[in-house]
View 1 (cartoon, one colour):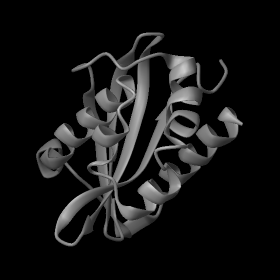
View 2 (spheres, helix red, strand yellow):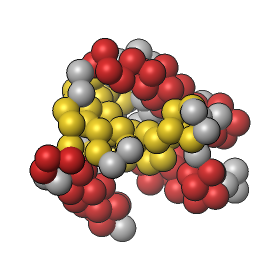
View 3 (tube, rainbow, N blue to C red):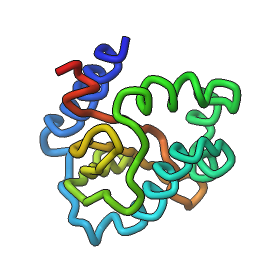
View 4 (spheres, helix red, strand yellow):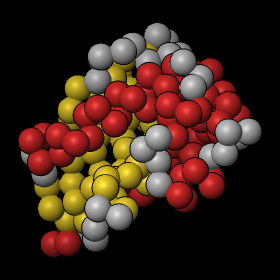
Length: 144
């Protein structure tokens, strides 16, 4: 199940990146809004704090991951494998914009793995950036 989720995330990102001329590569300064939001999500998951985690999510994310599903969908499968996020360890890796969505990637350290790719997608909702997706990729998550 974990491998399928990781592979779907990789395919989604690859689809965005390979979509050709409709994809615009962004610099770190273009996505400065993302840094604090991503840190908040990672720390919230480490603290198992749904209210903190949900504050920047769009309605689709909130419906998909209710308070009752937070532990089972987000915390259990991911943190059970790679451990907890080491606060402040994420480093910007890449960002692209495609069809009104911005996808930002970071490399981050977790207690059980030093190199975890964190990918977060954002969209404008009512003039505000909201998180519309979150994915993790690492050797341990891929079962290697």
